[in-house]
Structure formats: structure tokens, C-alpha cells
Image (cartoon, rainbow, N blue to C red; front, side, top):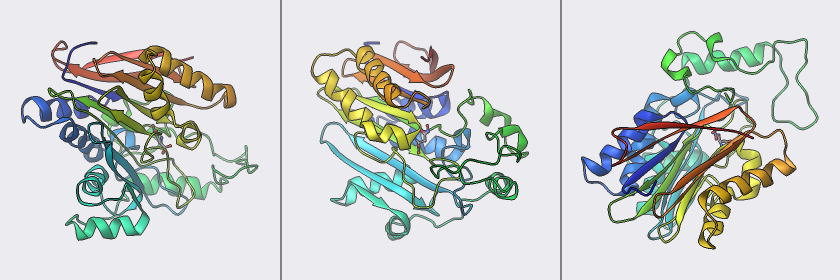
Length: 321
Ligand code: SD4
């Protein structure tokens, strides 16, 4: 910690972390460019199949994307939720930031906005996402996100296991540590001018009800940044985490002198006190580059970071409660 500039990213999305680092240090971009370029790598690589196209089909089989980018100097941001048929959600979010006075655009209207900005309309389904969906559908499992409707235990409705779907690259499985429905990329970058930016990108939750938007594009929930204080990002069960405004709560705690470690741990503990079975993780960073992660509901949480002190990208793992 303490070495700036600095990039930190949820999970073992090391190529994304490297791209963000290079954006600042080779291509002399700012923290915002770093977050966009880093998240774009995951959208292209379909990190864990939970970022980008071809993952998390909704009840109708469609993949939809959520993304946000947050500028901690200006407190300006842009986000898209339930974005359809456009692959690079983080760049559409950047366009919302750069070209509009809005913060969040959703659904088909967000698609139309993206098209008007020159983005290409594409089908986000792949053989893998269609296999995920038809497997769920054909096993006649009940929807996963309806209260009081449980899957039939006699049917093959168990948790999604990636190896059941051929065509999925081995490298895409590395990050699956018992947490296969929720792997947002959340990224924080601090550049040489001490500008802090944060962002998220995800295809949300598998078998979600159409129209569902997760925590990712919600300012103060999926990510929050304030260059005067620090930033936080989260990953996990967004439907639950959204109720706690985790990222902005952590930043406000740090503003009042609480350490990243204590802020992250307290927030995760508070969510767990209501939802003992939730899965999720947060990363908190202060403006000096001190960081800490906290997690719940799975054995451990890996994340990666890069600074002048790490030659290349380094991966850390913390144990969860
Ligand atoms: C969501 N939070 O839409 C996202 C998914 C996720 O880590 O975090 N994955 O619920």
C-alpha cells in the first residue's frame, strides 16, 4: 500500500488490471481511462462468463449488461443498466458520463443511445449462454429469483457448474471459487495526479427476471469514488448488497477517519447480520493507496493490484468470514 499510481481489481482479473495499469503508465491516460480500458478487457474476455456477452442469461435467455464509471475528481459518473445488444457496456457508460447530464440509462433506450453514439448492435448470446439457459429451462427448474418458489429438489437444478458447458475456456474457470453466479469486475485506479476513478461491469445474475438491474451501475452501491478520500467497489449478490449502499458507506466511513480495513469489515459484517447467507466482497482504498478487502459467504476472495512497487500485477487472497 501507499504507492501511487495504483490499480486494484476484484477477482483474478489480472489481464484487466494489467491493461488499466498500462493505460496510465504506458499510454499516459488518466484514472478514468484506466478503469475503462481495464473493464473493457474483461468485457472482451468474458471474465468468468459473468462479465460481458455470453453469460448470465435471464429467464428468457437474453444476456444484458450493467456497468458504471465514476470520476472522483468531479463526482460525475455514467452508467448503463439492463443494456441490451451492445458488448462494451463500460464504454457506453463512459459516453453517458462524457456526453450527457444523466447518470444512468437503461434497457432498450440505453441500446438506442449507444447506437446513436456509433456503437455496434450485436447479439450477446453465445453457444455457452444458450446452453446455460436451455439447461435451466429444460430441467424445468423454477426461477431462481422468485420468493417462496423453490426449485424441485428432484430435478437437476443445482448450482451452475461451469464444466457442464463445453466450449468454455479453461482459463475462464480460474476465478470460480465457489461463487459462480456473481463475479463483477470492480476496479479502482489512482493516477499520478491523484485522481481516483472507479468502475464496474457485469452481466448480472443468472436466470434473473428480465428488467433486473444489479448493484453494478448504481452509484454508491457497485462503486463510489471521491479523490479527496478514496474509493470502494463491491462484487457479489447485488440484489442484497444494493440495499446497503456499500461503496458510498465505506467512503463516508473513511472520510470520518475510519481505516479501509475497518470500514470494509464493518460494512460486510452489517450486511451479514441481516443476510447470513449472502455472498459478497468489497474493496476499500484510501487516497494514499492503502487498501483492504472484506468478504462473506465463500472461502476466500482473490483480487489483483498493480503499483510501482509490484513488478507487474500481484494477486492477493483474503479469507472470508
Ligand atoms: C450483480 N453484483 O449484478 C452483480 C454481480 C456481481 O460479482 O457482483 N458479481 O448482482
